[in-house]
Amino acid sequence: MSTPLWSKGAAAHQKVAQFTQGNDQMFDLLFAKHDIDGSLAHIQMLCSIGLLEPDELEMLSRELLVIRQEVESGGFVIEPDVEDVHSQIEMMLTRTLGEVGKKIHSGRSRNDQVLTDIKLYLREMCGVIAQEVMGLFDGLQGLSEEHKEALLPGYTHGQIAMPSSFGLWLGAYAETLVDDMHLLGAAYKIINQNPLGSAAGYGSSFPLDRFMTTQLLGFDTLHYNVIAAQMSRGKSEQSLAFALASIAGTLGKLAADCCMYMCPNFGFISFPESLCTGSSIMPHKKNPDVWELIRAQCSRIQSVPNEIALLCNHLPHGYHRDFQLLKDILFPTITQLRECLHLSTFMLQHIQVNRKILDNPKYDDLFTVEEVNRRVLAGMPFRDAYKSVGLEVGEGNFTTDKQLRHTHAGSIGNLCTKEIRAKMEAAYSAIPTAKG
Image (cartoon, rainbow, N blue to C red):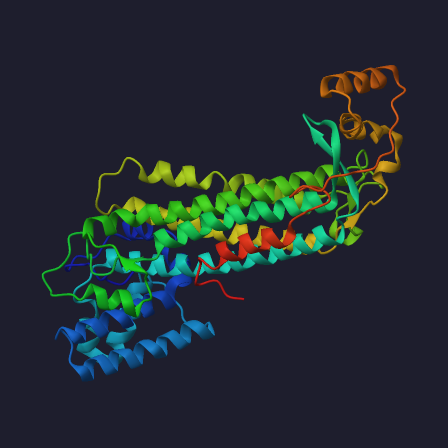
């Protein structure tokens, strides 16, 4: 391994170097462009306070943009003997520009450089995930309207309860995603604060213009207190992890419903055979493996905030190498959740709804509450109506017209689809990096 940027002459032992480097090379590629963007803002600020000459700024900016093009084209690599993305970029600048390349690190530490990179990357991911959640929301709302007349048994305690509908069921998941979007927006707000200039957590004797880099990098504000900036390492990751876990909770419950509703004992929904799997021994099987794996992945994702808490909670303030493992925990989680979002959206595009479920007389008891309410409207006291219907059910002679009269906001006959969309659009607009 080459001599790291922090070396004072002695090379690290190979075993120590490999262990401390961990998976940095793999994960650092995810925010290579953000490292360059942070450096571009940093050198503009250095020039403004006299630590770089204008011609040096021009040279560094030009070469950084060349490297950024390599990143965007997929040609950028971290060489095998280079510690991390920061070292790789500085080394490339020094190869091309000589001594000027070494000036880029004035006024910052690798600590605040990493913090800035991670915040820029997580800020971008908030927007990407928000867009993908919005895509699922759109699909759910479309299906909710398409199937709003198709009735479905509702359950409490796992028992047949009251009439529901596919529109009500699918619309419920759409509105639940609004809450998840609010949490994603909160994570975005926590993340979108500038730590650059906090250096190793105690600032710098250089007259850094931190307001300038805040503006250049598009942060809402900065972490004013430099110690607080360093303390945001872990908190930024955990805030996003909570939002991801909330989305995963919604997806996991939807997946569990789909697994249950696909079971022939229910037979409420189905999917084309090409989207299911079979059995090596039972020729009749049509298994919901996609939904089962979504359910399992989402359960794992919901453990991530706790894993981050266990890693960070009992560390004193300041930087610790423990934080390096946050990338190992959170970055794969982002990928896993996005895969679950993509597959959920895709599967729902092919859902097949059974519109004749309630033709089966075993669901007649769904309408007991409707009958109680009908008798109350006819003048019978509620408790008497409840008792009389209960006795008829117990004696096996309960009958009703099966007509539904649900008109209040959010019920079977009034899904409030437009109102729910307005809530979602307000939540979505709070994440400026979302595109679409």
